Amino acid sequence: MAAKEPFEIPVSMRRVCQRFEHWRKGHKARLPIPDTLWAAAAEAAREHGVFRAAKALHLEYGKLKRMVETSPAPARPTMVPATFLELVPPQAVGLAECLIELEGPRGKMRIQWKGATAPDLAGLSRALWESA
Image (cartoon, rainbow, N blue to C red):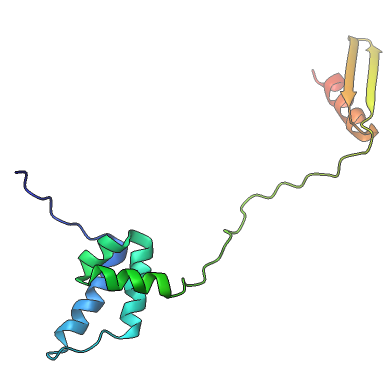
């Protein structure tokens, strides 16, 4: 039979474990666990699973599961602030199609453009035509 691997407590659950150990060491008589500790245990169970939290915190699995199901989850921000925001211009009703032919001392250029505006075309043709 293979030996069991030691149970490793996740880093984010260690603080809750320490709180439970401190509370248990401070009481010799059997007292009910305070609501604040149950809330912390339920949060750890939501994050890491009820079995893992019950094992790490030395709590009864069934009671912890009921606490997770009945206690409301803490309010968390639903969205992460955006680091990049793309602004998309509104689409034109009818996309214009444009064909431009330019001829100059360096040669000929033909641009076929769909859905463009005049400043876009002027800037592009100037950039292409004037580049060395």
